[in-house]
Amino acid sequence: MVSNPVHGLPFLPGTSFKDSTKTAFHRSQTLGYRNGYAIVRRPTVGIGGDRLQFNQLSQAVLDELASKAPVLTYGQPKQAPPADFIPAHVAFDKKVLKFNAYFQEDVPMSTEEQYRIRQVNIYYYLEDDSMSVIEPVVENSGIPQGKLIKRQRLAKNDRGDHYHWKDLNRGINITIYGKTFRVVDCDQFTQVFLESQGIELNPPEKMALDPYTELRKQPLRKYVTPSDFDQLKQFLTFDKQVLRFYAIWDDTDSMYGECRTYIIHYYLMDDTVEIREVHERNDGRDPFPLLMNRQRMPKVLVENAKNFPQCVLEISDQEVLEWYTAKDFIVGKSLTVLGRTFFIYDCDPFTRRYYKEKFGITDLPRIDVNKQEPPPVKQELPPYNGFGLVEDSAQNCFALIPKAPKKDVIKMLVNDNKVLRYLAALESPIPEDKDRRFVFSYFLATDMISIFEPPVRNSGIIGGKYLGRTKVVKPYSTVDNPIYYGPSDFFIGAVIEVFGHRFIILDTDEYVLKYMESNAAQYSPEALASVQKHVRKLEAPASESESKQTEKDPGVQELEALIDTVQNQLKDHSCKDNIREAFQIYDKEASGYVDRDMFFKICESLNVPVDDSLVKERQGLTMLPKLVSNS
Image 1 (tube, rainbow, N blue to C red):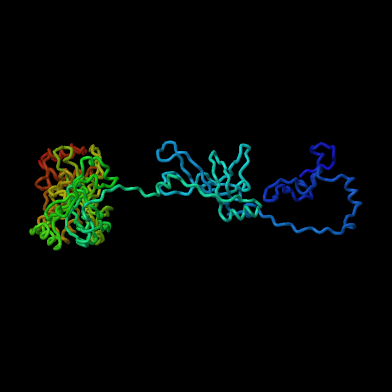
Image 2: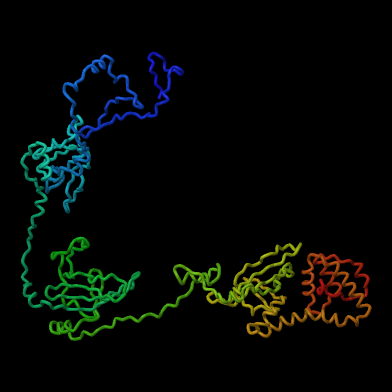
């Protein structure tokens, strides 16, 4: 706060000084309450408690007041205790004045009434001088009723003045939004409050009644000609005598329809009919005992009643020519009641005696309506769509929320990480596919098969994964009952068909032979013998060469030296595995030798570099050994 006590100096930097001892900078309160109303009072001090110049007394007045001492004359004044201030919203909280009133409303387009009287309640809220008009709800009036005017301050004239509780009284008219309300009475609290404030209340008046509402309270006059039939005699004669029939309603022809059982009661005392439902335990239906309440059933209607709105209004005696009687209920006949056809198949003994004495009908046998249950429908799985496994697709048909098929956990734990590997060739008429080789991996834990094709350099075919892990179905198995390939189906020379491609098993590893010998019961003797014979053929050349090494002549030794030289040149060749497989294919007799021309042909097809000078050293040779054993 910057103060400038020196008058006449401009309010500029250097001419004003700051009071460093001042610590309070709050503004004085300018809002106060008087009689419940907020008023603005003139501040006496400025910011921080500094006295304002225009509120201070002059020096002459201060000198005059200083020379007077009223206390010496009148003594010390006594201050009266201040009265407790209570705001209006607290003093008049939940205090409401209630007045009973009505207003008249014209009805221009009606032949039965020219105007209507609508009774309302006018509420005056003392806490904020607001008013509301609410019309009590009258049942079946057809008029939107309830809150007509929501709570608000209501204007009483064009000048903007609002209604006050002093303006309200009994026996007066008040106009609100163009409607004139006649105030006729008030409640006890309102009367006591107004009288306590010195207002003289007018005498109460009677509430005006609506003429049309009073007319509706009068009973309607009925003009009915009395009948010649003595109903009292019928009531006294046939009281408590009821005919009971057992019937069925066959609705199986419609969608979701069924055959349901009912009991039909015919009361002889007044010719009324009642239809009851027959419920069985846990039938899944609501326990409603009656399908049709007790009433007279029309049989033949007049011609003019065909267009009668029967679904809305009840049928009177004038629209009916003939009613259903006891002679219409016969065992073995159908009966149409309210659009439903009921077939009566039996009745109780009292009904049989009544028909025998009244109508002379003695033959009322029970009719068997039990239908033979059709044979249970065999649950058939939908055709396989080819996606995923058959077991996974079938789970969608067994439960609303499919679950994963159960797995053989013991088998997975026992055969974990056990894989059988086989070498196979593709059986194809395409010449480029004859030299392709594939490695089959059979996983014993899950009975799944994966196929891998080793990449061959400069072959033009991209190798790698040929088939991911999956179960392979045998070609002769059906879709509904698939049969998968098992370990017993893999042996030397076996043909495996995988999704339309045929593969021939050529070779196995040593682990397959050990597994087959340890689980010989799973394999056929021919399958086990084929693998054992193939392994012996591979081991036989090595053993024979060791036994006959000392018996070789010089020419054979030279031939072996030539073979070793060629093998050393091809040892680091990238396609040495393919060379071995190629020679095995053309050596159909498994002799270990091929012709010279066939040797050069195989080397040329595989782009194998062969030094002709080494071969020309042995011009007399007509056969060359197969480079398989040590390649």
